[in-house]
Length: 302
Ligand code: ADP
Image: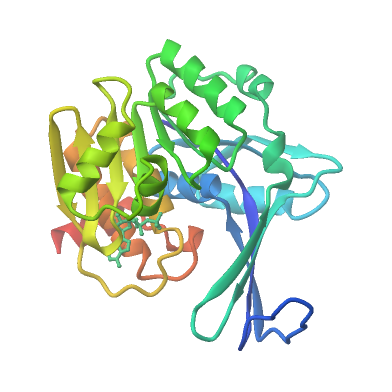
């Protein structure tokens, strides 16, 4: 099974002709509300890929929180470890999209910031094979989860997104680190995003602190690079027509965790997650675009 510690947001997406400048008011063309947050998206992807998946996080009790929880449960995610907090708003992402696809986004963490190491300590982690987190939850809580998980032999996966300075302190506690090219450039302190496998591999090795660690770098349409101590390989991206790449990285992380939880070997799991992520970019939205295991298998059989 997969245990995700992560963020849960309400995403409000307004479309406009032209993005407003400071002080300006513009009329929105449409408004859509979606469940979001990297934690919630990745938990939905993991659950849709078949592994029993628990999500730990926090939402507000008096706003959209309970509704979001119900939506996530509808996708098959176990939400009993999602706390409903009084007097605290649910995390939100306010997204404005202009007619050319350019956007402006403000994320308020709200209840997500209230998850503590004490919450983690109070949770039974027995039987959780894979622990998965991202950097939209407090680093102290992630640290507590990974320390507790190590004692129980769980596989610890960190998607170090968004790139934050405090994220690097968690790398020694992780077994698999997942980054996109921008995040890799930030953490490895490179001026340009590495693209070739050799450059990606060299930058990734800078982030390793133990010989048994694995770094996985998502390369957008180009696919995924996987780096271990004495091996680096590339799984090429699947050729698809991209409609909306929002949540592609989240789909990859959740699907990979799900595949590893059922003991698939690393290369096979990366191939499956790469296919799942390619399917996800063919649909709009994050959570609604996460494919089921059946859809991914059918796609791979071509
Ligand atoms: P992020 O969304 O975090 O920036 P990427 O853009 O690297 O992450 O995408 C994550 C994964 O999604 C890729 O490694 C790949 O498997 C898949 N993917 C993303 N964009 C495409 C695309 N245009 N065609 C096929 N697969 C894609």
